[in-house]
Length: 126
View 1: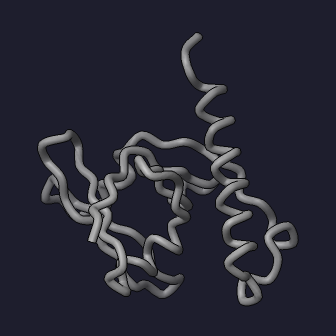
View 2: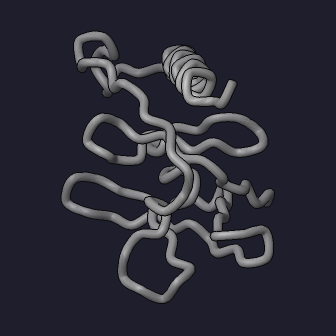
C-alpha cells in the first residue's frame, strides 16, 4: 500500500477540510476517509519531511472526518497544514449524493482541482 503524503488541504467557507492535495493529485476528504477505513490507502502528514504521522478516519455524528496529530495535543493538526480556500457548491449544483456515480465523482474532483489551481494561482507571489 502506498503512503500518500498530504502537504496542502482545501477548506470550504466554514473551515472544514474538503480535499487533500497529494503528489499524485487531489482527493476529496470523503473518499480519503473511506479509503482509510477500508484499508485501501494510507495517508501521512507532518510538520516537516522528517516527522510524519498517519492520518486516521474517525467516525462522528456528522460523518467521518480525517484526523492527524504530531504534537501530542488533542487538536487536529491537519488544520496546521497550508490551506487553500474553495467555494463549496450548493447542494443543487452537486446533485443527490446518493445518486453519485464514479464518472460524476471524477467530474467533481476535476472541478475541485480546477478551483484549487485557480486559488493557488491567485495567491502566489508575482
